[in-house]
Length: 214
Image (cartoon, one colour):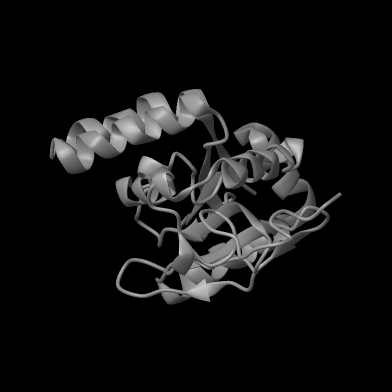
């Protein structure tokens, strides 16, 4: 399979976030077509929240558990990205954050960012925050910065559950519209309470999943 954006430096959800796309007027027809083909080429399991969670738990559960344990130990967020270059899936190294947040970890050139996986320290919610939804939403570009956002919230020990988690997927136009609607309530209408309710009542039930990490 031809690697996405093999002939040019990628933008948007591809490669470095420093080159994120901010407006569709900068996209020529050729680039729009190339973006569309690249998005279509991502693995089928990454296009749906439940199948993405199933894949992660089947292939990289230990990574999630380790991130949970580090978060419980340090009371700090940890984050990493899942990347796809058209042939192989890879994980970036995890990065420790501070002050209640963690920086996004960019994928290498010519890679699509399939997912952001990050932790919320013990005591914080296992649902994505409004900031998480706002960051993932593609804004005027219509292209998400990643297709899955997986949140891990460690449980206090001793507990049979290692962490409580949620994931939402923005592959579909409907999911991106819902995320944009939530961001509008949060940023434009300054209605934090309604936006938070929409995450729990609309975004996750319709385009996401919740699960326990054992």
